[in-house]
Each structure stands twice: as C-alpha cells, then as structure tokens.
Image 1 (cartoon, helix red, strand yellow):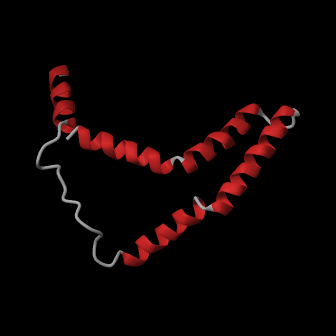
Image 2 (cartoon, helix red, strand yellow):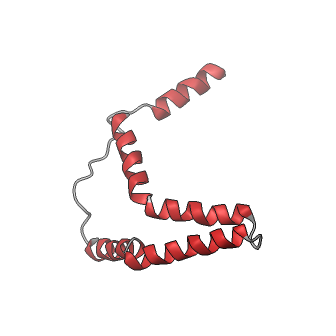
Length: 102
C-alpha cells in the first residue's frame, strides 16, 4: 500500500511531456482583460497606492505604540503591504522555481 502511494506521488510530481503546455501569447479575445488587469496593477502599485500604504503603516505603527491596536492585527496590515508591493517579485520567484524544476 505504501509503495503504491509513493509511486503515485512520484508520478504526479514528476515533470513529463504530457503535462507540458505551450504558453505562446495571450489567447484570442483577451486584449480587454489584459488591459484591465494592467490598469489595476498600475493603480495598485502607483504613487497614490504608495502614499496610502505609507500613511496606513504610519497610523498602524502609531496605534500599536500607544496600545490602541492589537499587535497581531498591526503586523497583518504591515505584512499585507509587503505582499502587495512585493507581488511582482514573489511571482517572478515562483515562475523561476517552476522553470528550474522542468
């Protein structure tokens, strides 16, 4: 029973030609969707978003220092800002890791 489970896991996780997918350009008809997502990314990572994130971190830090906010919730807000602004680097790292394992 255990050998079959290990064989199944190895077969599932191993890369093979059957699982490879060609990723050429964008699919037909996705132009407006790609443009909308580009606009959303520009809005989320633009100057206004950076200013709002700086103000939010400053307010959360001040509230944590004065004892008006739970430290766990404050850390969640700060980590959320790191994830938001580091999303591009995170995705690039995941993609490079996936390409190395092929």
